[in-house]
Amino acid sequence: MTVLSGAALVLVSTSAPSVAEPDGNASGRPEAPALATPSVAPADPGLTVPAAPDPAVPAAPGGTAPDAPAPQPTTEPVPGAGLCRAGTPPDAPATTEYYDGNVRLGPAVLPTASPVGPLLTGYQRFGGLTEDAWAADFLNDDRTVLRYPPSSGYVLGPDGRPVKTTQTLLPGYRLDRFGSPGGGFLSPLGTPYSSRALPPLNLNTPENAPLANYHVYCVLKPFAVDTGPVAPWFAQPGMGTQFQLNPAYLPEAGGTLTITWLLKHKFLVEEDLTAAADLPCVPRAVPQQQNRSATTAPVC
Image 1 (cartoon, rainbow, N blue to C red):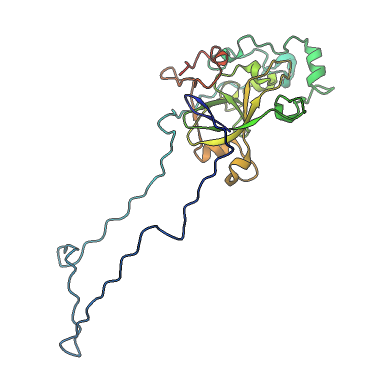
Image 2 (image 1 turned 60 degrees about the vertical axis):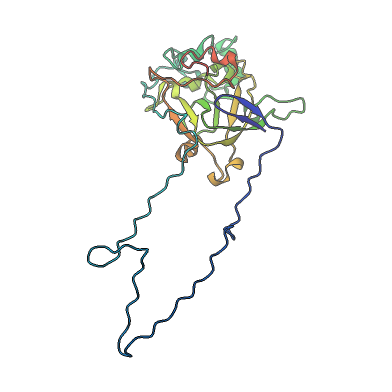
């Protein structure tokens, strides 16, 4: 199992660690012996002798004991709270003009503004193909449905199985995504668009969304993901790293695990890379060739 932190990549030779559950039937502390209380006989059978005041409790004005202070609510600390900079990127104008009038071919003009523009350096919408050749490979006959890669887009090994492993993302590690938080795939911050092997469709800007629906997230609490190299597809070279959410690692999320759930339960927080000052850096765990194209985020 691999552990990714905000500053380093640590390889651990064991499988997913087991966590010992505390014993809920014993506190580990011996009980104090019971104290005998002497009985006091009343002086008169018709009278009750008042109990002696407890010297440990100071008397309040008027002879009554003060109320005990109300317990203060406690908040569980979030490990990565000091490493992340919460922020919401501003909405951008929605895409209204598409290449060749087809939404699946992406915006007529590719984005150039930061932080999206630098990730498109060297990107070609159809790779080395013509539009017709690209459409024949990756669209259905009437060009209305995209053909996505098998095995969730992982590179396949000689045995035909996807090349992937399990990694734990630690507080302070940053990821990004072209798409809504309702999905379950992410990449290390700064991965070039061509290395993600995504279709041009993902560069469209929907209503009430940042440019190209691009989002940056920072890890607040550790969680495990499936990860592996991206297979070439959509006439793009791929071979970047992808992270795939797996509900088996967070069973409390139910059968479906999304970025929205991770945000709600404070495993992730969104950041705003459009802010001019104090931009977060890209962890060194991200390959350096991916960092050079993401000029908006310096390397840690």
